[in-house]
Figure 1: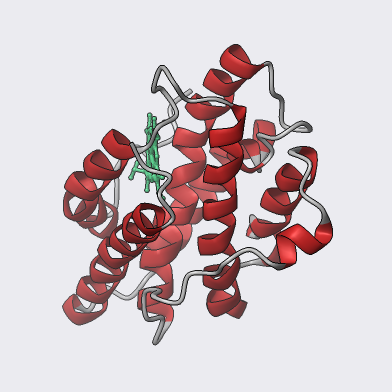
Figure 2: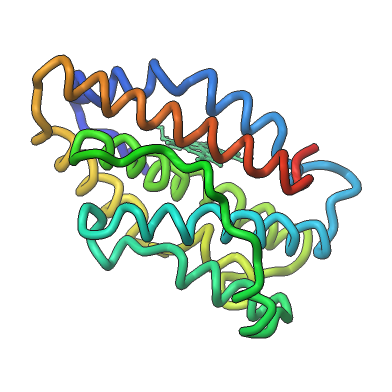
Length: 195
Ligand code: HEM
């Protein structure tokens, strides 16, 4: 199913170009496909995802439409993985987050979070094959929009297409996206959940 618009906006092209290496670097270090990866390691990884997404989505505030909130799905996944509400409340939260000064920065952060729902489809299928997990039993975050994944992505691309075309605003969006990838990778490394 093609999820890109027929003519990508200059901002989307700049985001892809600016974050290509970040995506490669993070993808290479994520352990989903490691031979020794197991459900306990998956749980630790999702705990670290929670520690990044919960505070970051709080910072996004009204820039992010409520329907796009992904922290609730992470909470449900952690519950399915047998964490109690108290365990979840006690999880460490990332403090070194990208700075969201304005809409331009928010769009860069959201590009990374929304784009990850595309790779999420691959991960959902892989975790189903490896561990027999489904969206109701631990992979809900990776399938947060379910069958509407393509629709949500296209709607986000429409929003990107309406963004300011001022060079400074576009540069701030790309910078925020790069920072989001870097902060996430740094955080996951600190939590010891990367390969
Ligand atoms: C092992 C982990 C990952 C895999 C296998 C993966 C795979 C993919 C794939 C296949 C796509 C293209 C989907 C399509 O065009 O339909 C994609 C897009 C994307 N992924 Fe990942 N991904 C992973 C992790 C991540 C993470 C952790 C993030 C961000 C935190 C991320 C952010 C993005 C973004 C922003 C795009 C959109 C690129 C664009 O079309 O502009 N990915 N990923």
